[in-house]
Each structure stands twice: as structure tokens, then as C-alpha cells.
Image (tube, rainbow, N blue to C red; front, side, top):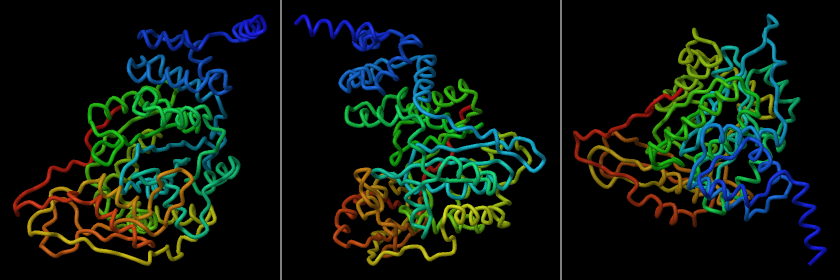
Length: 446
């Protein structure tokens, strides 16, 4: 007893705060001081705060929230847990500092926008350090898509990132383990304790990595709808406003767009097939919604970086963006002209009636693509590069009974049954003359 008490006293004396007191403060709807927040993140990273204690604090934050100053300090503390990249050494030909801009999407189905967007923005002299992730569940991952290109490498050293940004102007790669390591530990805990939905924790998780990345400006694409993480527009708006405030507090010029994710973006959901579609966009074609969102996000990124006389739409059509894409892929070991992987098996789903397609549920399509092998249930799972769903019609299209609506693609035909189950009720065909209400870009938040 005496020895145990002495040990406890020594530990209490060594630490500036006590985890239980901090939990009680948030439980009772109090405000944490900057010093308490700094200690909390540091102590959890060091293992002084146990998982069960941080889980209790996360739940208190989920239920009672945080004010702007708390979220800002929480984010800063997570940034301070690791390294911070610095792109101030990038130079224009005249010796001036090259501006940087990045984009983050909260994830969706068929959300391939990063691929054409990064080279498009780089056309206009703005460096794009796009640190991306992998897919989990029904939402696709940028790195998974690009890894379907033969030879392409996701992992680059900081020196290689800097060199590619200076030479090519754009890089899409995996984030290093040194950026906000506290977030990796916190996210894993939130994932198993029912606290992923806490907006202060979502916002600080995303923004700690983006701010640590060192970009000068940031455009957020916050998805809303069935295929998005945020199904409710009010919650998505709150998240967007919180992240914009965090960026501004950190000196990063930040804006957000709320965009519709009730319907998949483009005509593909998968990996290689989405790359194929992006190349079509870079060649001046591609689906209208992918082109529209790519151009709008490019305009926002360029404006944030101080470039106001650019015409991104023209740079897609005249081949300038394609030139940067080819250089970017080659710089990371890929062959932009190589044949992309193609699956062994396919199955087509047909329209059951004549009329207008008024609904194509994004979540259902995303789950089907996942079940076909395009996604993963666990981070360590492999994906099939060629698997996914190819769409033949989008809401607003006239269809006839027996016409193809979508084609399912996989290397493992036993997966077709569960993919079809996911798509039950995903489409709605209404009498001719009906028109679906579709608005791709819902709002802009700055």
C-alpha cells in the first residue's frame, strides 16, 4: 500500500494535469484551457493517458462539443505532435516564392476529382502537394486508384516531394507517418468507441494533417448525401464552417464547397476504371459532373493562391493539364500510356421499365463496388485494381426497359450476388416527363 501510494504520488507530481479532472471538465460542459489541451494530446501520445480515459473524453466532446478556441488549440496540439512540412523553398523562374494550394474531400462514391485537379492547378504555376489516403468501406481512396497504373509509387520522401513540386508542380502521394502522429492514434480509438461523428474531432483530424502538410491555401470539398460520411446538410455545413475557421486560425487561406453525394460522381466507381475516366477528362472530354466539379475546385484553389486570371476549363481542353499529368505519373515511376488492369468477369444490370432515371443511390453503388473487390473492409486488405461499377445512365436520362443501367466488374464472380443485393432499390425510374432535382454544388463557405 505504501509503495503503491508513493508511486502514484510521484506520477501525479511529474504530470501537469490529471486525466480524470479533464474528463470531468468536458463531462460537465466546461472549457479546457490551452495548457490542458496541450498536455492531453501530448500525454495520450506518450501513453500517460490510457485508451479508456481518452475514449471517455472523446465521448464527452461528442456530447457537449468544443468552442472555436478549444478546437483550434486541439488541432495545434496534434500538429505539434509531429513534423511540419515547409514549402517556402519552392521558387518560380523569377525567384519569387511559388504559391501552394491543396484540396481535401470528405469522401464519396466515384470521387476521382483529385486526379485531374492536381495537374490542372499546377498548369497555372501553383504547386499542389496533395497528400492522399486509401479507401475504406464504400468510399474510394485516391492512392488505390493511382496504384492501378503500372509502376506508380505512392510513397515518397520529403526531399522527393519537394523536388517533384519544383520540377512538375504537382504530387499526389501518401502522407508520411511524421505528420500529426497523435491523429493516427486518436482516429483508431474513435473508430472503435462510437465517437467518429464528433464534429470537433473530425475537423481537427482532417485539418491537423492538412495544416502540418504546409500548404498555403486549402479548398475543402465537403460531401453531403447518401454516399457521403455526412448525410445531413446541417451537420455537413457545421463541419465545413469548423474546418474553414481552423484553417483561418492557422494562417491557411481556406474555403469550402458543400457538394452533392446522393448520386455517384461520373460514370465509374472503382480504381482503374476511375483513372480511365480521369484521363478522358484530361483529354477534354469525360462526364459533365466530373468536369464541372474539377473546374470549380481549380478556380477556388487558384483564387486562394492569388491567381485570378486563369481559365482551368481551357487548360483541360487544350492538353496543358494532360501534359502535367503525364509528367507527374512518370515522376513517380508510373507509365501513363500503359494498359490499365481489366477484370475477368462482368455482369450487366438492366432497366426494368421505360421512363426517366430519377434516382441512382450513391451509397448502394459504393457498397456494390466495395463488395466486388474495389474497396476494403480493413486497412490491411488488398483491392482489385479492375473491379467496380460502370454506370451507363445518370439521373435525368431517358431509359427503356432492357437497356443497360450498370455493369458490375470483378475478378471473383462469386462476389456478384452480394453486389446485386447492395443495388436492390438503388435506381428509381419515373414516367417520362419527370426530372430529378440535382444540384452538384450546394454552397460555398468562406
